Image 1: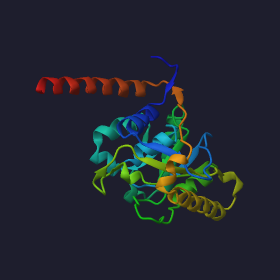
Image 2: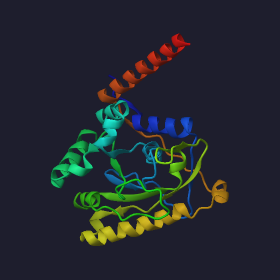
Image 3: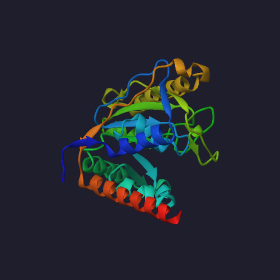
Image 4: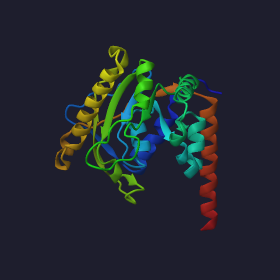
Length: 261
């Protein structure tokens, strides 16, 4: 198999969904920083709708896998099975996590297994989808993980993602222009005390939430575009299998549709 560098599978999929299918454009909100591209980063994103799963992967350049409840895998097995196979999704049972240290060890193993493809993880620290005009309290579990592993944390808030594709609102819209705000990176090793670390993360979260949500629609076009950089990763057997299977299924589906009509 070709082991040379190639575009991240996650990034290619997310770019296709974000730009080609839904034609979403992202605009940097005033005060926004740049994406943190260090290894081992926890990206804290606001959870608004199903469209988060491709918009947030796109905005993080495919650098991170996503933590997702196993319930999503049961609901969308054809999507989740290959995503979990290539490491793009880490599935967990939110209601059944009794041994948090075991979950942390599983995350460590996931990072180690897929270190050639993913240097970070996207999580939704509010713990649930939130389309209110205010933030919910941040869950501490993954922040404790980031603190004990001395990882970097970056807050990324994107306003209006529920307009793109939302099961809750039963709606979808193409050509959305959305403001996005990247906070400064927070380095856990600079905060020996967890409470100090948590308070700093919370302050950056509040700033990012406000920064993205105060942008007025009429001002969006005057803001600079956010254009993710293409991420090259080492080719993998897992990605080759998924790509080949996807191509075969696509061709088969098109052939079936042609014959049906």
